[in-house]
Image 1: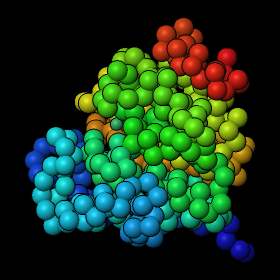
Image 2: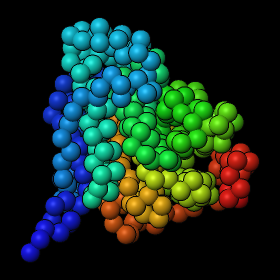
Image 3: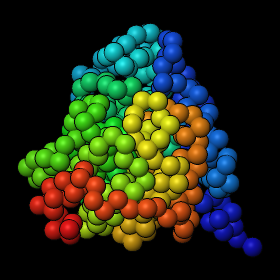
Length: 345
Ligand SMILES: [Zn+2]
């Protein structure tokens, strides 16, 4: 009997022990133990995964979103300890680890586009969404998701969507695709908050105008606020865009117990959001969707949130969430999004 897809693996998994070699010089929330917590979620999900062979990103792949000068600057930091900004450290192997994270995500995108497995989970460090074209920022050295999205475009994907539910705004990703209609950037985030960007009037420019959609939410928002934001803005805009690939900047720092942020999500909310995005991917993208780890600094919440997200991405059901129909943040974001996306009400 031929092997079925289920026997070969239901989803792709990207992970590598070398990601643990990006080590802070002392106490720091972005630490190797985060991946131990994420790996526990993979075990707990009881999903059979097929592994993506990790590899380094090439200069050419990085240069689609980062400047050559920045890539050269990072290379000079090999073997060193230091801080690139008050938050963002490098250890001796960090530059190579960051290149491995970005390159392996490129490999996962190639595998997803090539088929037959359409869904993936990327456990990687350092995270990426704050990394700017020419600057490390906010624990991020290279913008993994952006490198992967840019690569997908070279593989013939006309419309790639990045949905960023990390509690922080992905300023780096937004900046990289600011004028690019071929990559839709959608973000929910606590606001006002680090890094300060992500208000509703940031919508892109030129050909990219309207292809950046920000949903800034007041501190304290929980499952109902996120479900309402997804139902009113994220899912309708994403569906109207009809992406051929959906990449999720999957941070788990909007969890109620996260030490760095002030949102109030349950673990189940991540399952619901993943299911909502997978439904859109199933409708327009041949099911192609990948969860890419960004933030999440409470280890238990990272494990439970990622477990739910993996199951939500792959299963037909997810725990139903309440709604918060009168949330002012969602109202404000919907009013702004409506100008570019008539489907938003
Ligand atoms: Zn974050």
